[in-house]
Image 1 (cartoon, helix red, strand yellow):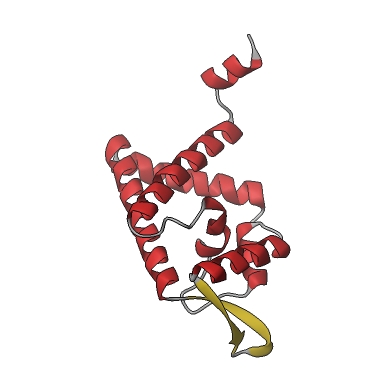
Image 2 (image 1 turned 60 degrees about the horizontal axis):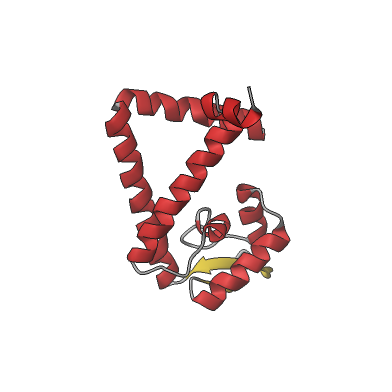
Length: 149
């Protein structure tokens, strides 16, 4: 059996995860574009998905997203230029900066949360609420085991 065929018939965790991620990103970013956020790309999720409404430090965003701090810095620069975030002094440590969402960033975050909630509700309806809840619990355990967190 050719490898590509085997992976189609019996996809492993990596393939299942990547298929899910890429499909989810396509749907999410298409809907967000339709809702007024056409310039945001999946790579920006390393910042926007983990950003607290009151702001977050770049080092925390890097740790949570699994990206290098330099990558987060580049993404923050892009998001500042697009008007989604701004850098502000951290009130707890004036030497540090917080990445803070602007009104546009907060709108994006709220719409993203709503779209993802709709997507999850549709999956739960398709497979059953109980089965989806069990899937999320197990998948969360697998992620924690895999990432050590």
